[in-house]
Amino acid sequence: MELIAEGGPYAAADTNSVLGKVRLILEMFGLDDETLSLSELARRTGLAKASVHRLSQELVRWGLLERRNGEYRLGMRLFEIGQRVPRQRILRDLARPLMVDLVHATSGTVHLAVVDGLEVLYLEKVSSGNTHVNHPSRVAGRMPLHCTATGKALLAFGRRGLLDEVMAAPLARVTARTTVAPGLLAQELDRTRELGYATEFEQTRLGYMSVAIPLAGATGVTVAALSVTVPLSRSKVDLLAGQLGLVGRHMTKLLSAEEI
Amino acid sequence: MELIAEGGPYAAADTNSVLGKVRLILEMFGLDDETLSLSELARRTGLAKASVHRLSQELVRWGLLERRNGEYRLGMRLFEIGQRVPRQRILRDLARPLMVDLVHATSGTVHLAVVDGLEVLYLEKVSSGNTHVNHPSRVAGRMPLHCTATGKALLAFGRRGLLDEVMAAPLARVTARTTVAPGLLAQELDRTRELGYATEFEQTRLGYMSVAIPLAGATGVTVAALSVTVPLSRSKVDLLAGQLGLVGRHMTKLLSAEEI
DNA sequence: CGGCACTGTTCCGGTGAGCGGAACGGTTCG
DNA sequence: CGAACCGTTCCGCTCACCGGAACAGTGCCG
View 1 (tube, rainbow over the protein chains, first blue to last red):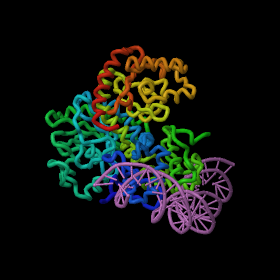
View 2: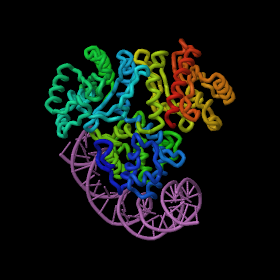
View 3: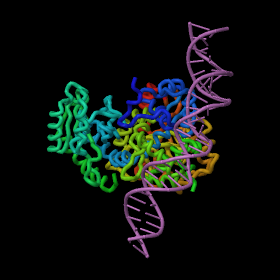
View 4: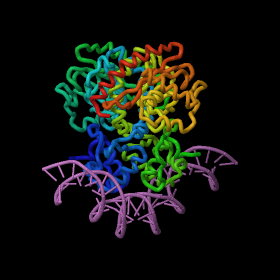
């Protein structure tokens, strides 16, 4: 089991530095494991039980971990500090109200995403309770760049060279309709640049399609992407693209006031 | 200037432990200071420049900090890990779609909050772009318990003893209409328990009022509160309370499936 | 031009914070 | 009751960490 590899495009942890150990401890808490016992943490991290005990106590004092009847869980302070990260905070604060309106105009699910490493990172997800379906996406969740509408918008309008890096590795097949041929992907991106928006039909999830647009910051550089996902049955691409475009122009104005 | 005291109800940082230093560094990034230079960090934390340099480098390698043309800023990884905190994640994921609907039903601003320490901590905030006003509240922002509708709902239906702790210190006057007399607050909370919902008229911000209900987890214990804020001019307390009640019952059902 | 006041970065010797094996008390098993 | 687990504490060794000092690069002012 490769523990260190999980969780994004960052360098590996160093076992014999305090920070390395803390990192191992905090990153053991995946989305599945909500709470972990001391022994379990020691086992999974490979650290000595005494060390985990000492560090965990200090983390609890900080508020990054909490202790509920013997088990450790990630603490509220971590959420609080995470909300201060400037890029996500500015983008979300500006986009959220517009996303809410978009949900009601389209009856779909709206995503705000940035590129992090070689993946799409979802900053925000808004959907209505009425039309709510169990989408696999999560806020702070990751998806491949090549099979999502947001990913394609970011690839098409983002920094050059990103596409090459993505195509350096074989493209993962997520559904039967996912584009895995590099040539086809390049073609799709050309089309995306032409139209000004990206689409995706059942390439992420069967039965659903998405339309996405890039969001440009003050300098004109693409900093994020916004998408609407609806059931395939009621796909009105041009209508959705139009509604997204309106919001996109509004966002660009808002973003120009901020520095991203 | 008291640097350590800021940022919640947690124990102070220890300067001569690695974690203590890291904590100082990370918590220097407030909502105002988006980016900080190395020297500035060293100055504010009181740590040696070499130490800050070494630790910051390790934090960048981890992804908790990012470096953009010489300046440090909080990194995306921090946001990502913060989103895994289970209490906030479960509550938000369940509540967000319902909050979106509530926004459109009421044309107000909807907040989801928990109590952390002796304050209200906002987990989520949803408002529409049309009716958007610059509310001072932020996601992951904090407010006093005694002057907000969510705070009063949490005080009235939350764990016993919390009220005593709050009243141990003098109640801060936020606006001219904020309840600062302990006796009056107790009376308001009695009324809240009687009605099943809490209200607040211009006690947080002049021109606005809020209605809030408690959200009960699987065991019946109050775990969070949900509120709607609208301009004072169109305050329909009983209507808002009714709409909140519907959502509240729905949330209770959803929360019973999870373990909070 | 040189001096100055800043940056960020590197070096390195002393040392105490951190380490973790081992032992300890408290459970929950069969 | 022993066995196997848990969390917690102890303590001496040692190496990762510390931070003053020296270094290089930059922008400003006289």
